[in-house]
Length: 201
Image 1: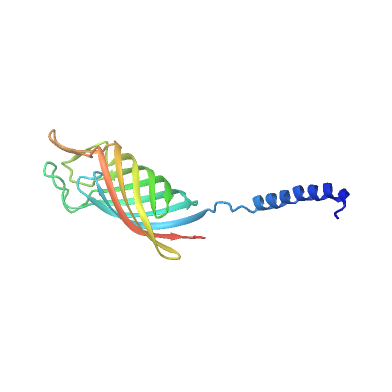
Image 2 (image 1 turned 90 degrees about the horizontal axis):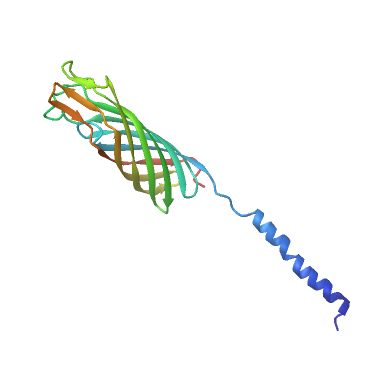
């Protein structure tokens, strides 16, 4: 027959023992890991130069489990000749250089980002074409990016994306009172490239 004097002691031990175990489990709860990523993408842009532009976009990102912040550099070269109402630039191409910052949310293999771009259009064109604002024409855009990524190796991912932007600062090229080009009020950028996680976990 159990000793009645031990019953309060057994109850007290039963209540006290789970508490350290719970605290111990709380201390060992996994914390979100942060790792860095490097990427390089080929991009095709519409609306930022007089004709469609093609270029490269290297990027560096810091990524948590479902969030990332990235900085990107973009170099674009306009394809083809200038629009018919603007005299041709000849062999010298119109180009654009941009820097972009994005904040992304990731879910499984897809992502959605807010993107801000700042840069300039450079047009080394004939002397009879004047440029409103000088040789460097500033660009400022704000938009969204959606895309997907696929892991093809432990330290290698393939990704593709599409961006839609509102152009807040719109460059203007002019040749005389009538012939002119002004960037579109909206722009689109499509890209495909490779991502290299430094510590994929």
